[in-house]
Length: 290
Ligand code: GLP
Image (tube, rainbow, N blue to C red; front, side, top):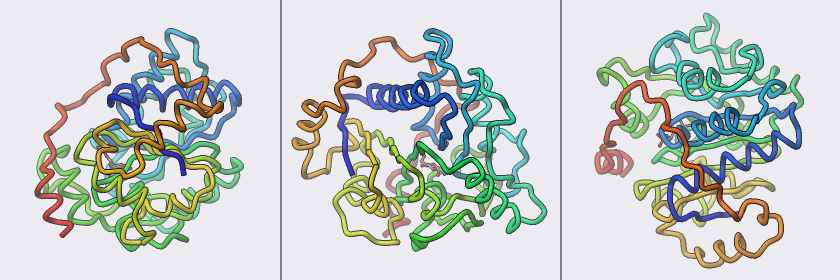
Protein backbone atom coordinates (compact mmCIF):
# COMPACT_ATOMS: atom_id res chain seq x y z
CA UNK A 1 0.00 0.00 0.00
CA UNK A 2 1.12 3.53 -0.69
CA UNK A 3 -0.08 6.68 1.04
CA UNK A 4 0.06 10.12 -0.54
CA UNK A 5 -0.65 13.14 1.62
CA UNK A 6 -1.71 16.40 0.00
CA UNK A 7 -1.93 19.79 1.70
CA UNK A 8 -5.67 20.29 1.14
CA UNK A 9 -8.81 18.33 0.30
CA UNK A 10 -8.94 20.11 -3.05
CA UNK A 11 -5.36 19.07 -3.89
CA UNK A 12 -6.10 15.47 -2.87
CA UNK A 13 -9.20 15.33 -5.10
CA UNK A 14 -7.27 16.95 -7.93
CA UNK A 15 -4.56 14.29 -7.67
CA UNK A 16 -7.16 11.51 -7.81
CA UNK A 17 -8.73 13.11 -10.90
CA UNK A 18 -5.31 13.37 -12.55
CA UNK A 19 -4.58 9.70 -11.84
CA UNK A 20 -7.89 8.72 -13.44
CA UNK A 21 -7.19 11.00 -16.43
CA UNK A 22 -3.70 9.53 -16.79
CA UNK A 23 -5.06 5.96 -16.84
CA UNK A 24 -7.85 6.94 -19.24
CA UNK A 25 -5.43 8.57 -21.67
CA UNK A 26 -3.22 5.47 -21.55
CA UNK A 27 -6.21 3.18 -22.09
CA UNK A 28 -9.31 4.86 -23.57
CA UNK A 29 -11.28 1.63 -22.98
CA UNK A 30 -10.52 1.76 -19.27
CA UNK A 31 -12.87 -0.20 -17.02
CA UNK A 32 -13.26 2.33 -14.24
CA UNK A 33 -14.81 1.59 -10.85
CA UNK A 34 -16.60 4.55 -9.29
CA UNK A 35 -17.74 5.54 -5.83
CA UNK A 36 -20.25 7.98 -4.39
CA UNK A 37 -20.28 10.22 -1.32
CA UNK A 38 -19.44 13.83 -0.62
CA UNK A 39 -15.70 13.26 -0.90
CA UNK A 40 -15.98 12.26 -4.56
CA UNK A 41 -17.87 15.33 -5.69
CA UNK A 42 -14.69 17.36 -6.21
CA UNK A 43 -13.07 14.52 -8.16
CA UNK A 44 -16.01 14.36 -10.56
CA UNK A 45 -16.12 18.16 -10.87
CA UNK A 46 -12.44 18.13 -11.82
CA UNK A 47 -12.94 15.31 -14.35
CA UNK A 48 -15.83 17.24 -15.92
CA UNK A 49 -13.58 20.28 -16.11
CA UNK A 50 -10.81 18.22 -17.75
CA UNK A 51 -13.34 16.97 -20.29
CA UNK A 52 -14.47 20.49 -21.19
CA UNK A 53 -11.12 22.24 -20.95
CA UNK A 54 -8.62 19.58 -22.00
CA UNK A 55 -10.76 17.26 -24.12
CA UNK A 56 -10.49 14.31 -21.73
CA UNK A 57 -12.35 11.65 -23.67
CA UNK A 58 -14.73 9.23 -21.95
CA UNK A 59 -16.32 7.92 -25.15
CA UNK A 60 -14.81 4.43 -24.88
CA UNK A 61 -14.65 4.25 -21.07
CA UNK A 62 -16.78 1.69 -19.22
CA UNK A 63 -17.75 2.26 -15.58
CA UNK A 64 -19.00 0.17 -12.67
CA UNK A 65 -20.18 1.73 -9.45
CA UNK A 66 -19.53 0.14 -6.11
CA UNK A 67 -23.05 0.17 -4.79
CA UNK A 68 -26.68 1.26 -4.93
CA UNK A 69 -29.46 1.52 -2.37
CA UNK A 70 -32.18 -1.13 -2.48
CA UNK A 71 -35.61 0.26 -3.28
CA UNK A 72 -34.66 3.62 -4.82
CA UNK A 73 -35.57 4.21 -8.45
CA UNK A 74 -32.92 5.62 -10.79
CA UNK A 75 -34.67 9.00 -10.77
CA UNK A 76 -34.78 9.23 -6.97
CA UNK A 77 -32.68 12.17 -5.73
CA UNK A 78 -30.75 9.91 -3.38
CA UNK A 79 -30.09 7.02 -5.75
CA UNK A 80 -26.47 6.63 -6.66
CA UNK A 81 -27.48 6.50 -10.36
CA UNK A 82 -28.93 9.99 -9.97
CA UNK A 83 -25.80 11.11 -8.10
CA UNK A 84 -23.53 9.77 -10.88
CA UNK A 85 -25.64 11.33 -13.65
CA UNK A 86 -25.56 14.73 -11.99
CA UNK A 87 -21.93 14.75 -10.92
CA UNK A 88 -20.27 13.02 -13.83
CA UNK A 89 -22.12 11.10 -16.50
CA UNK A 90 -24.16 14.02 -17.87
CA UNK A 91 -21.14 16.32 -17.73
CA UNK A 92 -18.76 14.26 -19.89
CA UNK A 93 -19.03 12.35 -23.19
CA UNK A 94 -19.56 8.92 -21.67
CA UNK A 95 -22.19 6.64 -23.24
CA UNK A 96 -24.94 5.88 -20.73
CA UNK A 97 -24.91 2.29 -21.97
CA UNK A 98 -21.32 2.00 -20.78
CA UNK A 99 -22.19 3.08 -17.23
CA UNK A 100 -23.20 0.37 -14.80
CA UNK A 101 -24.66 0.38 -11.32
CA UNK A 102 -26.42 -2.44 -9.52
CA UNK A 103 -30.21 -2.25 -9.94
CA UNK A 104 -31.58 -1.65 -6.46
CA UNK A 105 -35.13 -2.04 -7.81
CA UNK A 106 -34.59 -5.52 -9.25
CA UNK A 107 -37.34 -7.96 -8.35
CA UNK A 108 -34.82 -10.72 -7.78
CA UNK A 109 -31.97 -9.06 -5.90
CA UNK A 110 -29.87 -12.21 -5.60
CA UNK A 111 -29.92 -12.68 -9.39
CA UNK A 112 -29.12 -9.01 -9.87
CA UNK A 113 -25.97 -9.41 -7.73
CA UNK A 114 -24.83 -12.38 -9.80
CA UNK A 115 -25.60 -10.49 -13.03
CA UNK A 116 -23.48 -7.56 -11.84
CA UNK A 117 -20.50 -9.76 -10.93
CA UNK A 118 -20.75 -11.52 -14.30
CA UNK A 119 -20.94 -8.23 -16.15
CA UNK A 120 -17.72 -7.03 -14.47
CA UNK A 121 -16.06 -10.31 -15.46
CA UNK A 122 -17.34 -10.01 -19.07
CA UNK A 123 -15.65 -6.60 -19.23
CA UNK A 124 -12.37 -8.18 -18.23
CA UNK A 125 -12.45 -6.96 -14.61
CA UNK A 126 -11.98 -3.47 -13.21
CA UNK A 127 -8.72 -1.69 -14.10
CA UNK A 128 -8.95 1.17 -11.62
CA UNK A 129 -11.37 1.33 -8.71
CA UNK A 130 -12.03 4.60 -6.92
CA UNK A 131 -12.94 4.19 -3.25
CA UNK A 132 -14.14 6.35 -0.40
CA UNK A 133 -14.25 5.21 3.20
CA UNK A 134 -17.15 5.28 5.63
CA UNK A 135 -16.51 6.34 9.18
CA UNK A 136 -16.83 2.72 10.27
CA UNK A 137 -14.26 1.69 7.66
CA UNK A 138 -16.71 0.37 5.10
CA UNK A 139 -15.81 0.19 1.41
CA UNK A 140 -18.90 0.52 -0.76
CA UNK A 141 -21.44 -0.79 1.74
CA UNK A 142 -19.30 -3.60 3.12
CA UNK A 143 -20.23 -3.23 6.74
CA UNK A 144 -18.28 -4.68 9.69
CA UNK A 145 -17.69 -8.43 9.44
CA UNK A 146 -18.01 -8.50 5.65
CA UNK A 147 -15.93 -11.42 4.51
CA UNK A 148 -12.78 -10.53 2.61
CA UNK A 149 -13.96 -13.10 0.06
CA UNK A 150 -17.41 -11.55 -0.32
CA UNK A 151 -18.81 -10.75 -3.77
CA UNK A 152 -21.59 -8.42 -4.93
CA UNK A 153 -24.54 -8.96 -2.61
CA UNK A 154 -27.28 -7.33 -0.58
CA UNK A 155 -26.11 -5.90 2.74
CA UNK A 156 -28.00 -4.45 5.66
CA UNK A 157 -26.71 -0.98 6.51
CA UNK A 158 -25.20 -0.57 9.95
CA UNK A 159 -26.39 2.03 12.44
CA UNK A 160 -23.19 4.03 11.92
CA UNK A 161 -23.77 4.14 8.16
CA UNK A 162 -27.40 5.11 8.56
CA UNK A 163 -26.36 7.93 10.90
CA UNK A 164 -23.68 9.06 8.45
CA UNK A 165 -25.92 9.07 5.37
CA UNK A 166 -29.35 9.87 6.87
CA UNK A 167 -28.84 13.66 6.71
CA UNK A 168 -28.86 13.34 2.90
CA UNK A 169 -32.43 12.02 3.02
CA UNK A 170 -35.56 14.09 3.75
CA UNK A 171 -36.19 12.08 6.90
CA UNK A 172 -34.20 9.31 8.59
CA UNK A 173 -37.14 6.95 8.00
CA UNK A 174 -36.94 7.42 4.23
CA UNK A 175 -33.40 6.07 4.15
CA UNK A 176 -33.20 2.54 2.80
CA UNK A 177 -31.99 -0.12 5.20
CA UNK A 178 -30.34 -2.25 2.54
CA UNK A 179 -28.04 -1.81 -0.41
CA UNK A 180 -26.36 -3.85 -3.12
CA UNK A 181 -22.61 -3.56 -2.91
CA UNK A 182 -19.60 -5.05 -4.61
CA UNK A 183 -18.00 -7.39 -2.09
CA UNK A 184 -14.61 -6.94 -0.46
CA UNK A 185 -13.42 -9.82 -2.65
CA UNK A 186 -14.70 -8.00 -5.75
CA UNK A 187 -12.73 -4.90 -4.71
CA UNK A 188 -9.59 -6.93 -4.00
CA UNK A 189 -9.83 -8.31 -7.57
CA UNK A 190 -9.55 -4.82 -9.12
CA UNK A 191 -6.16 -4.24 -10.73
CA UNK A 192 -5.62 -0.96 -8.93
CA UNK A 193 -7.46 0.65 -6.02
CA UNK A 194 -7.29 4.35 -5.20
CA UNK A 195 -8.95 5.44 -1.97
CA UNK A 196 -9.62 9.13 -1.29
CA UNK A 197 -10.29 10.38 2.23
CA UNK A 198 -10.36 13.97 3.42
CA UNK A 199 -11.30 15.80 6.59
CA UNK A 200 -10.46 15.33 10.26
CA UNK A 201 -13.49 13.11 10.86
CA UNK A 202 -11.78 10.42 8.75
CA UNK A 203 -8.40 10.55 10.57
CA UNK A 204 -9.09 7.76 13.09
CA UNK A 205 -10.54 5.31 10.62
CA UNK A 206 -7.81 6.04 8.07
CA UNK A 207 -5.13 5.29 10.69
CA UNK A 208 -6.86 2.01 11.54
CA UNK A 209 -7.24 1.09 7.86
CA UNK A 210 -3.61 1.85 6.98
CA UNK A 211 -1.68 0.92 10.11
CA UNK A 212 -4.05 -1.18 12.17
CA UNK A 213 -4.43 -4.94 12.33
CA UNK A 214 -6.23 -6.55 9.40
CA UNK A 215 -9.75 -7.38 10.50
CA UNK A 216 -13.11 -7.93 8.85
CA UNK A 217 -14.52 -5.53 11.47
CA UNK A 218 -12.97 -2.80 9.28
CA UNK A 219 -13.39 -3.67 5.60
CA UNK A 220 -10.81 -1.10 4.51
CA UNK A 221 -8.03 -3.02 6.29
CA UNK A 222 -8.43 -5.62 3.51
CA UNK A 223 -6.67 -3.14 1.23
CA UNK A 224 -3.42 -3.86 3.08
CA UNK A 225 -3.54 -7.18 1.21
CA UNK A 226 -3.93 -5.55 -2.20
CA UNK A 227 -0.78 -5.37 -4.35
CA UNK A 228 -1.60 -2.03 -5.99
CA UNK A 229 -3.47 0.25 -3.64
CA UNK A 230 -2.96 3.97 -2.96
CA UNK A 231 -4.58 6.00 -0.20
CA UNK A 232 -4.73 9.69 -1.14
CA UNK A 233 -5.36 11.90 1.87
CA UNK A 234 -5.41 15.51 2.81
CA UNK A 235 -3.39 16.54 5.84
CA UNK A 236 -6.32 16.37 8.22
CA UNK A 237 -7.34 12.83 7.23
CA UNK A 238 -3.68 11.79 7.57
CA UNK A 239 -3.46 13.46 10.99
CA UNK A 240 -3.25 10.22 12.98
CA UNK A 241 -0.79 8.30 10.81
CA UNK A 242 2.55 7.42 12.37
CA UNK A 243 4.55 7.31 9.15
CA UNK A 244 3.46 10.57 7.49
CA UNK A 245 6.99 11.80 6.90
CA UNK A 246 7.94 8.61 5.12
CA UNK A 247 4.85 8.84 2.90
CA UNK A 248 5.68 12.47 2.04
CA UNK A 249 9.23 11.52 1.17
CA UNK A 250 8.11 8.71 -1.16
CA UNK A 251 5.73 11.00 -3.05
CA UNK A 252 8.34 13.73 -3.37
CA UNK A 253 11.16 11.44 -4.49
CA UNK A 254 9.92 8.37 -6.30
CA UNK A 255 10.01 8.60 -10.12
CA UNK A 256 6.57 7.07 -10.68
CA UNK A 257 5.02 10.08 -8.92
CA UNK A 258 6.98 12.60 -11.01
CA UNK A 259 4.14 13.33 -13.50
CA UNK A 260 1.79 14.02 -10.60
CA UNK A 261 3.94 16.24 -8.42
CA UNK A 262 3.22 19.57 -10.07
CA UNK A 263 -0.42 20.12 -9.21
CA UNK A 264 -2.59 21.82 -11.77
CA UNK A 265 -3.60 25.15 -10.36
CA UNK A 266 -6.91 25.40 -12.18
CA UNK A 267 -9.62 25.61 -9.56
CA UNK A 268 -12.21 22.86 -9.96
CA UNK A 269 -15.70 23.89 -10.96
CA UNK A 270 -18.14 23.80 -8.13
CA UNK A 271 -19.49 20.28 -7.67
CA UNK A 272 -23.20 19.94 -8.46
CA UNK A 273 -25.19 19.79 -5.26
CA UNK A 274 -28.80 18.68 -5.24
CA UNK A 275 -29.04 19.63 -1.56
CA UNK A 276 -26.78 21.55 0.78
CA UNK A 277 -24.16 19.23 2.23
CA UNK A 278 -25.33 18.44 5.72
CA UNK A 279 -23.03 18.68 8.67
CA UNK A 280 -22.38 15.13 9.75
CA UNK A 281 -23.12 14.20 13.35
CA UNK A 282 -19.56 12.98 13.86
CA UNK A 283 -19.77 12.39 17.56
CA UNK A 284 -23.00 10.52 17.27
CA UNK A 285 -21.44 8.24 14.68
CA UNK A 286 -18.44 7.53 16.87
CA UNK A 287 -20.84 6.79 19.72
CA UNK A 288 -22.66 4.35 17.51
CA UNK A 289 -19.45 2.53 16.74
CA UNK A 290 -18.33 2.17 20.34
C1 GLP B 1 -21.26 5.90 1.25
C2 GLP B 1 -20.76 5.02 0.13
C3 GLP B 1 -19.29 4.69 0.31
C4 GLP B 1 -18.50 5.94 0.59
C5 GLP B 1 -19.01 6.60 1.83
C6 GLP B 1 -18.22 7.82 2.22
O1 GLP B 1 -21.53 5.18 2.40
N1 GLP B 1 -21.49 3.81 0.03
O2 GLP B 1 -18.83 4.06 -0.86
O3 GLP B 1 -17.15 5.60 0.77
O4 GLP B 1 -20.36 6.96 1.56
O5 GLP B 1 -18.94 8.99 2.02
P1 GLP B 1 -18.39 10.45 2.21
O6 GLP B 1 -17.46 10.70 1.12
O7 GLP B 1 -19.63 11.27 2.11
O8 GLP B 1 -17.76 10.50 3.55
